[in-house]
Amino acid sequence: MTEVLEKESFSFQTEVGQLLEIVASSLYSNREVFLRELVSNASDACDKLRYAALTDASLAPPDGFAITLGVDKKTLSISDNGIGMNHADLLDTLGTIAKSGTGAFIEALKAEGKDTPGLIGQFGVGFYSAFMVASQVDVLTRKAGEDDAWLWSSDGKGGFTIEPATRDTAGTTVTLHLKKDAKEFAEEARIRHIIKTYSEHISFPVKLGDDTLNPAEALWTRPAKEISEEQYGEFYKHTSHAFDTPWHVMHNKVEGALNHTSLLFVPSVQPFDLFDAERKSHVKLYVNRVFISETTKDLIPAYLRFLRGVVDSQDLSLNVSREMLQTDPKLAKIKTQVTKKVLSELKKKAAKAPEDYAKFWGNFGAVLKEGLVEDPSLRERILEVCRFASTGEDGLTSLAAYVERMKEGQEAIFYIAGDDAAKLAQSPHLEGFKAKGVEVLLLSDHVDEFWLQHITEFEGKPLKSITRGAADLDAIEAEEKPDEDKPEEADLSKLIAAIKAELGELVKDVRPSKRLTDSPVCLIADEGDMDVNLERLLKRHGQLQTGMPRVLELNPSHAIITKLAERADGDADDLLKDAAHLLLDQARIVEGETPTDAAAFARRLGSVMSRAFEV
Ligand SMILES: Nc1ncnc2c1ncn2[C@@H]1O[C@H](COP(=O)(O)OP(=O)(O)OP(=O)(O)O)[C@@H](O)[C@H]1O
Image (cartoon, rainbow, N blue to C red; front, side, top):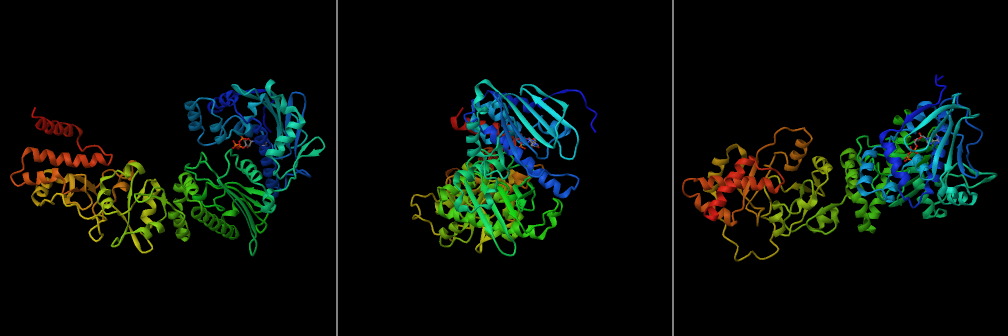
């Protein structure tokens, strides 16, 4: 038993304080959603007790779970007979925000000004939304299996108090002392309307007086044709504590050796924890309508962690513990079936509505591509739904469509990888490919480098980086007739020897280029060396200290290079030496790198300019 008998005062965690200030002062256009949040919490609490009682015989669940609303002149209360909270739970949950991304969210809100309901909506503030309508919130609660009850109370300003209290049974009652401008939420008609709008699909009865306000049956058990888009939307918001309208709804019943029903949603915005290291799944697992677990990785693969919703199967054992789920072969089978179904739905969407699919891809493409590395058994199906930016298309392309457009004589699927698609599109490495009308994929997600290590070909065509090794462009016919005025290609042998001698170990080699048409130089990785972008990525993450020297390619038809080639006929003079370094630095700068030696670069540039201006 806890030795706390007095009323204790606590301060909110800094983030909660800041968040409450914003919530309370924002003109949240849709503030009635607080009730949805509190009813959702009550429903979750009932789910949790029902599950806990399955595995712990000492917990006696009530005869029937219910959520009871009560209104008085100035108060509204939401009562449940669910799991309840003890002293430690109250401190852990109602004084802090466990949600990841909270700090970033608050920063974003502050930057945008306070009147940003869209952002608040996107984040979801759960329990704290009560303070949009209440000047004081009391939480009377008793945890199932424990004797002590507690009263948590706060005005939502600086902190909260906790004191011992009495409650006959386990559960929680949240009482809102309504603000002057929020008295409407003590009117029965208003409450009925809100519950009808937001909480119809809750699987526990929601009661007001003698009436039950909802059908209290799990939405996913109803036939899809009886469910409206709005009901799906509200269910999505309820189960995933989200505020957006789902991009896509998938409701499927699988009957056969292993029965299961899934109701899954693809959000239309990125959830805040999408790129957290934990890569948690948020699809809830139910066994015969009893909630079992929310975050099990054994139900949905990490690369589909953007999915929300539920999977329910009557063929799993009801008293399966969360630990046992990991080794349950039936669950593994459900996971594969659900994953395949989701991929096939995405494939349909991509074919039917490519522009809409591009929105999905922008939000979740980088996550889905993790599957190319992690799930070799479904690699081909995942690759089918992958889309890529390309020099040949305004929108996105699939690999299959790229292959169809390949030029005669083109043997490989060409790509360039880097941080930023817009910058990649400007890269000098692309020049020769553009001139011949050869399409190049622009890969700008970090994960691209990783799957490219595993997938080296598609439909028999190798995937080839245009920043590594020789450019195989000779076999491909040019689109236009060769330019009559095109300058002659110079013989670069002496120039190359001179530049090599000057640059020494700064470069691995110096060669004439086939990939350049407009720029004088570029740097590439030698065949067999690590590609430029991968090396950059590994260096940034501290996994590589120094990179390999690169191959410097010279454009034999560029005026500067031909002039230098003429000059290189004699002994290497100072200008030629400076030019060698400047060309290398220029190639580095175009790639977003710094010159090898900034001071020397500035000096050389100065000296070349002095000559040009005859200073
Ligand atoms: N009626 C309740 N019974 C038991 N625990 C509750 C109840 N209401 C809230 N809690 C606890 O407080 C926590 C915080 O609730 P809150 O609504 O802020 O966040 P959430 O429901 O976890 O997520 P979200 O912020 O997305 O709504 C819950 O996760 C739960 O542990």
